[in-house]
Length: 236
Length: 292
Image 1 (spheres, chains in turn purple, cyan):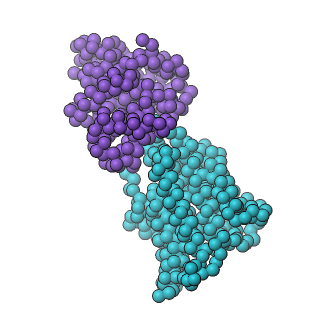
Image 2 (cartoon, helix red, strand yellow):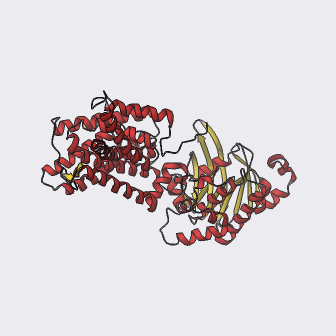
Image 3 (cartoon, chains in turn brown, green):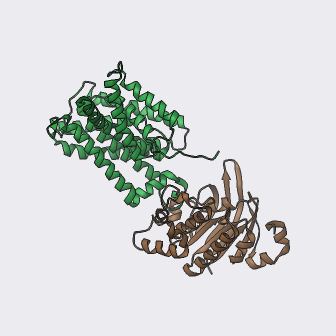
């Protein structure tokens, strides 16, 4: 397997404060990888650094091409869809317009068909298609955010705490769908989670991050089975 | 009774111009959260350009269309050159930028075309409209052009992909970038459109207020009042606000003793203050809720 995303010696800064310290990891094409860690460990910053939304030094390579000189919108155009923390819903436009916005960089062909596919993945969105997206519940907005990201037909999807604020049953549904998307559409997924147990169930590979450094890495199953790691880093 | 109807119709006609100015203000406010104090001077400058084109022998509508295009380009250039570098600067720096733009345009217009008052033609004529003494053909033309403009903008924002992208960039810029929208160019586009809309207002009002570098001063203040009344984040509200301000201005000038022509402007200001106190989001605006 080849690495789709390669990160080397990545530092990230908020003003004077350094949030990532020489981060190194890679994602295999077609895999699901999870980045675990406590609050403030640097998980969100890692995703933002990949999309060049914070000041960084070091190298991020996507399919062999360096990303650091590109603007966020140009990185997205390469096929990297980012579902941000807080979902980033376009609250003032309709659900269907949110989906169209996900495909705004594509040519018109195939968009209508893709929207119908999203309604198969997420039937609740079909019922709400003409509604202002701001009126959706938190769970529905998270579904919409994932669907909007998929409308890009991404090669890599970055998800920032998709389970945040959702009821356990909805979270389970959502992760089931993510697994399906990874298998059927061959989308590589990097998911950042505090809900480690759930993330490890769908992931192939896991990294544990602490104060801006990778402190542990391994197959998802091995990390889930290792009681020491679970207790010291993952809190369950 | 005739006087009353006449005042209402005349109010709607000038209100159409206020609505256009308000529309231009709203376009830029949506994009950068700032009121463009130089909007009136941009419109004035465009109107001078169209006048110059006619002096060179172009027919009215030819000059009209070329001015629209030039204004659009001018708006984009102003954003790229002056306000893009100020995008992350504090509000006061931006305000200084607007004032600079205001005086640059005002003085250059005076320098190029001098400060004497010039007549400006109307393509609609000034005969009674449909044989009625209540409203002239030019006034009817102002209303008609504004309504057409509003319809065109509605279609643009509602049914085109670039319109959708502009709405998205204005409402949640960060998410817009994450779906691949170049938000910086959306802002420039907003400036271009605002400049073009403003030029329409300038060219339509010039036959009434005559052409000179300070012609848009009063109009801009009414435009502010209209935008505030209609809601600063609602293009539709801006035009309705324009009509309402125009009607209100005329009725107050006619029927409230002591107001007359001289005190009309303070009425617009009183209206702004009242709206901000009673209904800060305006008639059609969405209240903006911010987490602190």
